[in-house]
Each structure stands twice: as structure tokens, then as C-alpha cells.
Length: 158
Image (cartoon, rainbow, N blue to C red; front, side):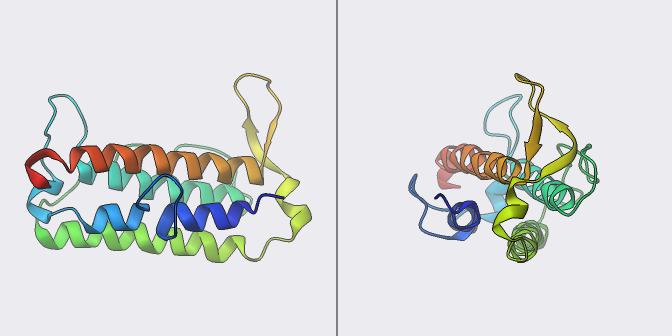
């Protein structure tokens, strides 16, 4: 059986099948390029990293029993400061959010993964989402945005 927690660990900082994991991709971004909008109308690398952190925290909250909702920090938080130190903090916060998620998930028994989350349904079938489905969605979310960051990092060798 698929170990969803192992898949989350790989997407975050492990041996991801799709290539570099999220932490490696973020750590390779130069601070001076993290806040640049290389494509008009598109998010910066920092914007995406903040978005990933926000949703990681939201998924952790839902897995721990909170009802579904908008992340506390918002869907797309805006960087308050654009500096090397701010970029380091963004990476650190992403790391901490993922480590906390993984720590919380290690407490789940196999049967708990199949339990439903509160107030959350799949848009197509209208059925409830289980904890394993929710975490699988976050794994996919990490991979999707890691690919965006990797592509944006090609601009100016970010």
C-alpha cells in the first residue's frame, strides 16, 4: 500500500520521483531574484513559497480536526519585506510548516488516514475527503508549485 506520509516527505525534502524536492528548489533560489516577477501578471518565487506555506499550515489544521476554510495567512500572502533576510525567513517558515505537518501525521494510525475531514467534499462526486486524500492533494500541490519555481528560477539564473 502507498505510504502517503512517505510521499509527503519526498515532495518536501526527500528523493522525489519528479526531480528535486521543494526544499532543494527553494534553497537554490538567489535572494535577489526571489521577489522578481519574471513574467508579467505571474507570481514571484517568494509569492509561491508563501502560498505553499500557507496551504501546508491549512492542511495541517484540517488534518488535526479543524473545518476546511481559507488559510489563516490567506491563499496568496504578499511578502511584507523584500530582502535576503526575508527570503531566508520564507524558506525557514516553509521548512517549519512541513516539519510540523509531518510530525503531526506520524501520530496517525493506519485507520485514521481513512477518516473524513470536516466540511470538505470533492467537487466532482460531492463525497467527503479523507485525511489520506487531503494529504495526497498537498503532495500534488507541492510538486505543481515546485515545478513552477524551478521554471521561474531559470530566469536570470534565479
